[in-house]
Length: 136
Length: 410
Image (cartoon, rainbow over all chains, first blue to last red; front, side):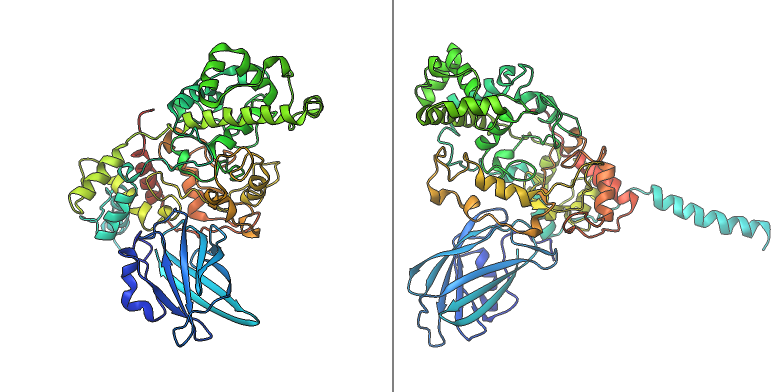
């Protein structure tokens, strides 16, 4: 399982499975569903994603009807469950580029294998969250 | 049971064990697609150009590299006149020193790391307490047990040596007038150096520190050129990439290939020792014991804090970078998980750079293998590695593979 280095990121959850291999080949949105039923699309600015390279992601948050969700605050954590360690960096959402589209900076993955990213999403007092699991 | 049956019952199992112990490695006949891709990812042919260093405008200036090379070997850049950068980073030992702990003007704290290919790393030192090669290069100059010099003395040397002065000023502009420079002064030195530093006006202090930063930038411009040479492994990896997944038994020996098979597979070395330099440049706690009589090193836990506080970091006033260029420093991670974590060293020429680990705890690669095979509980923090359960023969094969990464000195 750990032997596959770049590029294919494979989501194990979420409706994005049909597009799963595409992250390694083209810049495509991948979507996970939040606990509160919103859709969180994730686009890597580094395509294909490679190990050991600092890069950014864009996060597009929409509600059940497909309308952008503006003004959300994010907390991003993650790591490698199989190796009992976290991310090598501390990525942060540093701005909202347009309503509902957020810039997540400071991502770098330093090992091949299974990664888990957890998004904490706050909208006023409303706490929501989503997680993304992929193989690098 | 008669004697003959008894002899057979002892002899046959013994012979079987002997055959098993002495049998040559029998790696599978072909690498599969993902194995071949992993092997190709380790080749020097997959190494891009060194990443730009926006914090150092002179990073790729040939004139700065020439100045840096002279400075690197100049013994006058020390308090005793007997220690240069090259005293510990010896070119003939892949820029290491063969000692467990570095020895400069006095005994050091950690094992001297090699320099080949380190320009690809976002962090420097075993604990990553510097975020650029030039900020790193400045530190030993003023550390009392390394070169023990101070920035005023070094800038005085540059400003009074006519060759240095000409080389420096062609790149960076005018040096401070030596008549205005004290013999010795630094914010980091002993009492007399600090008092001398405080007695200088803020303008002159800034001039000296700026010239000092430029000295580091020239040293970094030279060190960026120190790259590992091609090894037998690289030719093999390129052949695997070129000829489908065929095993090239004539380029590497069977034991070496079996070691490679373990390296990318069962032994999990490639998890951290990945990419063409065999390092992810990251920090891991692997349960290395402290040197007897020393407190365990906090490693990256301290290093990230020190890097943030370094006036010569990417976001500091001596950096040439825009704040947006300093992603590694801005998004550096903190946390207790980093206690005891030290940087993954690259493995090219590892057979030439004994002893091993951040304080040279292990004399031989066999000891290193045994350590990772056992994955002992860490004294500080937790060991990320898990026991591997490799046999002695497998560990010897891994070691055989590491010999294929040797290359002639650059």
